[in-house]
Image (tube, rainbow, N blue to C red; front, side, top):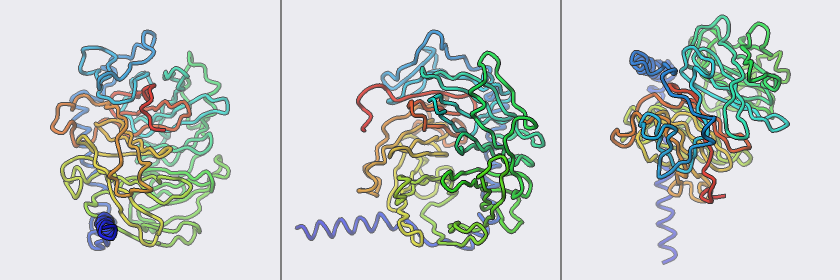
Length: 454
């Protein structure tokens, strides 16, 4: 009997790990290397956003303010949190996350709103500051010990660039790096430590000419990038997904040294996929692997930053494209065993509970915090993955839906590009800032009860 059980378990494990597949090199060249899929998705987003703009959705002044002076916080009760009781527009589906504050993009100093990325920094004295990307720049705020957002000012988009909703932020020590798809934007480098001296009664509009600590543009053909990444241990930054794709690096990666953030230096780059970047001047491919339903591999995070055995991955287009596991429109979180970089294995997956599209996720202490567009913030318990990499034991332990407009849609949400782009979940206080594309920024925190499985 024991032999039969072992054989069955081995068979099931083989089935679960048989999801990865060889890359279709012709399709890769035609759809991905050419940029056709990337441009197609950007066009879809522009169309969606133009329709929402025409409908007045992005005028954040229409959204009612959170009554901070009257409410300490709004508890998630019986699956809902509402700061204007009885009004469906301000009633948010939730589970195990309470609402502490909300500020519209207008309250955060933006003339056009449309939130994108976000990042934060905790000062040596424990003060928590957040950078909130918007179409026309980046807003700065402090998250108080009561979970309130206090607006401190903003940094406009780079002087030579036009507004762009694509604006991503990552941190390096007390600095943030801001990249954008806007032509001539480059990468802004700004020290958030400056915010410690700003009086909330007099928010400061910083300037690119006087207040930037650094700016890097050398490796970007026309000054645009899709995202930026940093490595504090190795003291470098990376710009990814730049345009156009006609140069030697195509739309791959370009590295720059951050030993002195005020004087970043280009290190090298590559236009290939799946590489060893130890030597920035001689980057080599390690492997190139596809998977069932692959449509637009978007973003991932390692489960354990020390062991780095598992990669948790999302595909931004499989739900929209009705491909593979995402064909029914429920967001898929893919699990990859990357113990062997030469032969990574897709061991399993988790299917979301409501229909929508996944976008940016970050992992903290074995939990994945996911910004899934109209579905809002979803928190998954991934601690079972090391002993059950099929994903069958993954549980959603909390969520906060920032987009009530689609609550009654089939499956509980729309498969479209609206809602939350990103969030920041790493503050020691436990407060999470959710940046949304239409309304503004929410502050939530886990319900103070024993449900959180530590």
